[in-house]
Image (cartoon, rainbow, N blue to C red; front, side, top):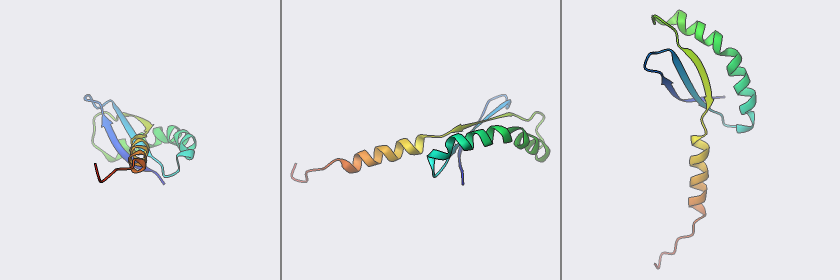
Length: 85
């Protein structure tokens, strides 16, 4: 499964950058290739389902912000606090 975390649309609506994350980061390369292959189909479907004058080019990018947040939380959990200080 995949989670779309954010979509950035350029001001002129010509480009859409879609950020995604995966529960299993080891599948990122495989997912990236599949998304790249599917981008044209997704763009065609978007075009047929919306009334936009121009359909944006679609670009997918793995979102590592959740990975970074989890690493930070893990580091914070590892910090021992002294309640006497």
